[in-house]
Length: 93
Length: 478
Image 1: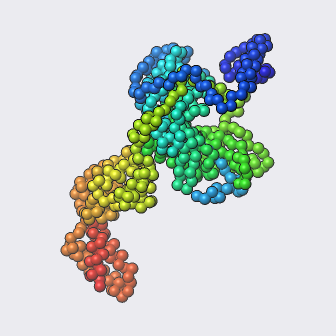
Image 2: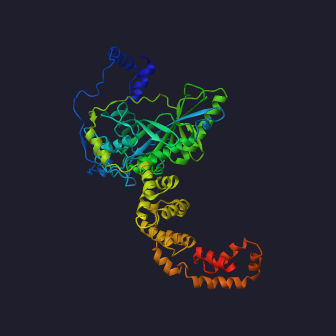
Image 3: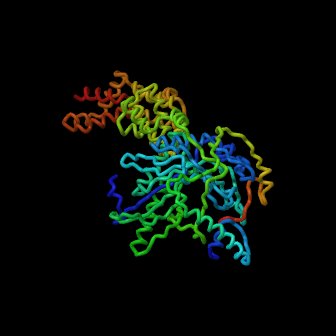
């Protein structure tokens, strides 16, 4: 894995790392990738992918409204808000 | 439309559409918060929609059943097992940092939408959550977020690249609109965003075996814009290829004001959504019994209704197609014909009423026309109380006032004159006052007959029974 790939991964995960940490992270990640490569080399033809290890059927609920709205509480907890909205830094320039 | 008509200057457009449809459920896809448009910002938000730690999504059965309905209506395969995936990206209107969607195991696969002149294949339709809404105009340095839409159930309907012109794309979109509104799974309102469309457009030489590189156009929010945006994009690609250039695979935004598509900000890094099965939701099995149950609750589809209208009300292909184009119109028609002649009613809905609706850009529900009042009007026409011309005036009166037909006829004295003596009296007077025209007519100027009819109608303010006027005039002039 080169530096550009690493930077891309850090960006996608929104993780900040100092440049001096790169070699250590690269080493760890390379280990992980090697493991994935090993799995990729297995012959899995004709096997259904395992989407979930639990052999359960998902539960569902009836389409009935339960109002658990706590608008003011929600807005209070956000770093910035006005009376009705969450406020964030300007998204478009 | 024949296939070969779609080649433009030696280029064959190839188009596929992704249509996002907001489902008409009471609650959101994974939370019990209300699903409604136009409420106070952030008032329809549950802990789950906030993406707070520790909450678990629970699937809404209503949304699932609506997906099944769409699959049944398009002769598609309904999944025995569907699986929800996480599509990961960061954006302020997506609190969880991922959207729950379906990638490899969607609820619906391999459907068919019949446009009459061609069958368009549906690749798949999958359930997913809508994001919240960001707004940018309120503050200079901030954007604001409304999460009411966050978690609203969407059905994304993905077509195969089977469409060959902008017109075909519009026809397909209208058909999807018709299906979802007939099924009552969405209001299909494009201006409010409950139906949205992205188009994948590429062009190739007609004898080519491979599709060209495609561009995806986003943000198309009306039937008219679909046509314009696609045509614009086809032209843009033709220009590039004919100048020896290459099409870049990219996402472009349609700007309705400037009527152009433009590249969305080029991203430094390619999109990488890192899909994986959502661990909060185990695979969902759909039983044959559930599908059967949904089938039994389904209303008649457009084609079935058209066929029944032809049989039951003895309408021709065209009339039944127009009446069934929108579910609302078909329902109105059936209410009207309970009490009056089905053919006259069809003619008046398709002609005069539709003209009024189009002119005023209103839907039936928003107009003052009720089915019972309209039926009363048709009855007055068929029993000869009023002439067609007067009926038009009355219809316009109802359109404005919503008053009852019988009241309008009484108060304006619009009742048709069908009394022989009364009409004869008027005719005699007119013939007496127009002696020279009578002479001319008798010496062979047949066209003057219309003049006499016109005079009688003028004198009776259009109330004379036209059939009787014709007959009596003929008798008197012979």
